[in-house]
Length: 68
Image 1 (cartoon, rainbow, N blue to C red):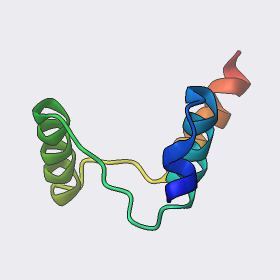
Image 2: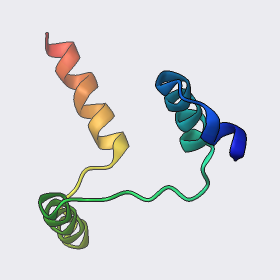
Image 3: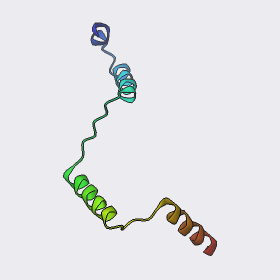
Image 4: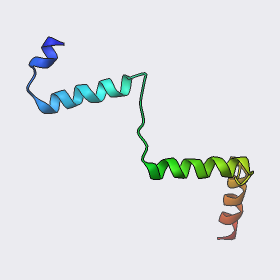
């Protein structure tokens, strides 16, 4: 910790931070109110069955591509 604190090369410290961030086990995501609202809407849609499965989407894409 002392050695890192003694480094004054900002780009090097940013590289170290990037490494630490990618290895961190507890990533905390901060969401805005708009993002939270969209998540709530999405969850409500799922509860109502208003969604497509991955298989349905892939089938639709295949059909669309055949039409082109």
